[in-house]
Image (cartoon, rainbow, N blue to C red; front, side, top):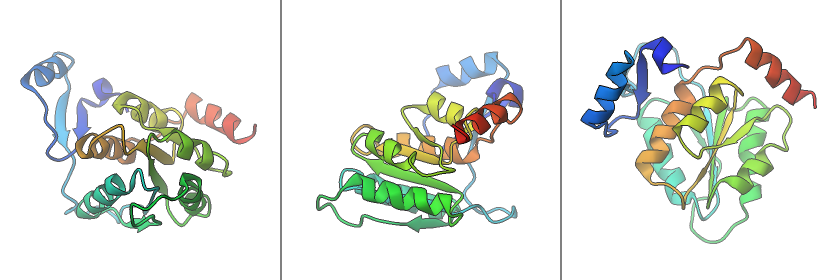
Length: 188
């Protein structure tokens, strides 16, 4: 979604938007809108599969609570403790759930996010993207129709992760020429 075309930019609940940021956005005709609190009459939200290794379990658990508060059904595929485990196991669980249609979206959290992204992309129909920042997450959804978001539990805090997850789940795929390109990814 191009914020200038839409006129709004969705931010995570409780996100800090400075007066300078509001003024800069207003100069482009954009206003900030806080994502809802999950209490709407809209249809049921799609299922989000969650997984993490020991480096991401704390962030994953916080994201699960956030998603559930916002009305997103969360399928928690582990891990559930901080003892060392192997990130590919959980990336494969999440990617498999998305590939089989058990979840529409997936979120995987390991130490940095790169390894899980590589593992998740081994599954047919999965388009995993590393959530390095809001711009990358927006582009991943809008242009590449990403369906799995990989985050680093050691690279960001809870508020930044919630903002990226909100953008990931609320941004629509643009279609058009981007859909053609996504088809080329799938057939490689």
